[in-house]
Amino acid sequence: QMDDISGEHIPPLIDATLAAGALDATATSVTMKKGRMGVLVTALATDATAEAVAETLLRHGTTFGVRRTRAERTILDRRFETVATPWGPVQIKVGSLRGEPVQAAPEFEDVARVAAESGQPVPLVHAAALAAWHTLQH
Image (cartoon, rainbow, N blue to C red):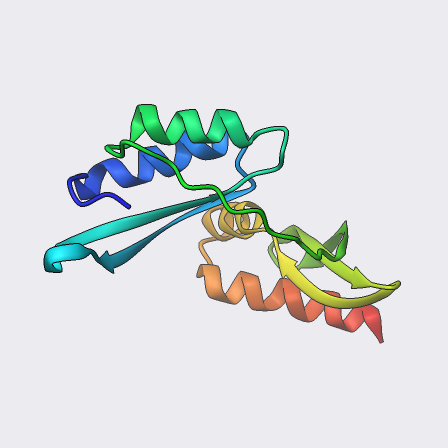
């Protein structure tokens, strides 16, 4: 928790934690003791990267300490498939549970690239990619 970090310093802090090996990192507005507004920066790390991520928070943030909590994680098996849209190919990340696809998400970088190259809106390319994937599943 940091009550003295400038808002423009939060994105570089999150980027630094990801570069240090964090699986994900977020910032949440919180009310701290004495009613002060602050930011809770949370970074998820493996045992192998936890120390580097903690050091990054200490070096790039304004905190004087890092709290660690162990957590278990259940994840879907992941694979990538490429689908065709009217404007170009887009990769889809597919998450499966015991072999059954339960989640599918177009890769944002592909969607943004295809949208920029074609002049189409990002939401339209995203929807087209997801629809193309669903069509292939049936």
